[in-house]
Length: 257
Image 1: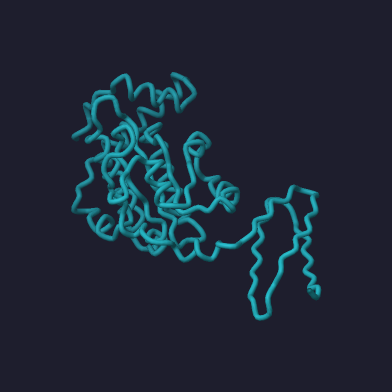
Image 2 (image 1 turned 30 degrees about the vertical axis):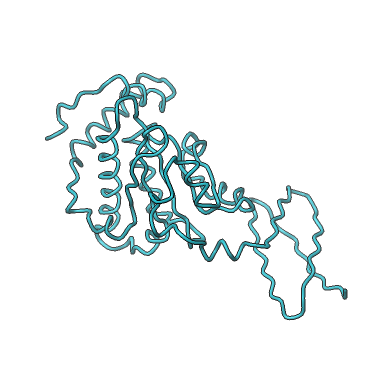
């Protein structure tokens, strides 16, 4: 096959050693498994994954900070996929692999990492099944390739909540994640210009609008907080709770102004 005699350079060896905490034996096993995977799965032909790119679920965005290639995942569009459909998961993962190989091939000398943008517009939960498989393939076959992962839009008041939902992502990768709430923030983190961002990221997401004026309360285990909020006649209010290994006692009392 195309990669049967693939040469392994020093940079590749360093990435595998680093991800295995410099264990030579561990890195050797991981690298051999990865080379076997490459022989069995590459190359990916554009024709077999073209629909994934046409539907804007995975998007190549060009060069960003430090001449690193940038790509985007659209979580809302990925949530629309019926993952029980035969071949759906394989097709989307292969599209991500095609994207990875294209970025690596286009990297200028001295660059060996990419930047990922995760478009969270319009979602409340991530596409868990895809994310789990995507993370597995990237972790095992493209270690230490991610320079930075930018998640947009994530208002500051819910960053802590989003972080608790990222347990499926390896710790080393989580440390590379940044959260931004504006397109200007995306450009600042990635080095892209505004006109390089995908059209579907333009505008203010509806879910972001809902959070305007919201109040976040972070309460430690065993803690008690009293919060007062004025309510006008006819005004609607919504409470959302996220408890981690604890229970919540909640009391609501209305007092005349």
